[in-house]
Image (cartoon, rainbow, N blue to C red; front, side):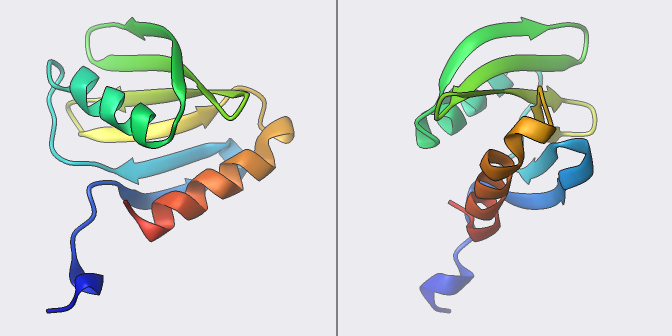
Length: 106
């Protein structure tokens, strides 16, 4: 088994360019452990958190990625984590770049 088979922590599940959404693969988490996971992810991306919101089952963090704002969301029942653009038309380049990062995995 070479290094290429190494399981990365974060990867791409689906890039829905039309919806401005990037669905990512993450280590397992629950509602209470998501914040630690999200902080790690935000740090890895050299992004920063602007605002954190949550309700019964969804965490929604507004983050700044290279001067561009997007949502990092998670739904713990389905263990889904995704990025969502605030303005899809203005953000194609950043979303393409982000999707390519996750495609490589890290």
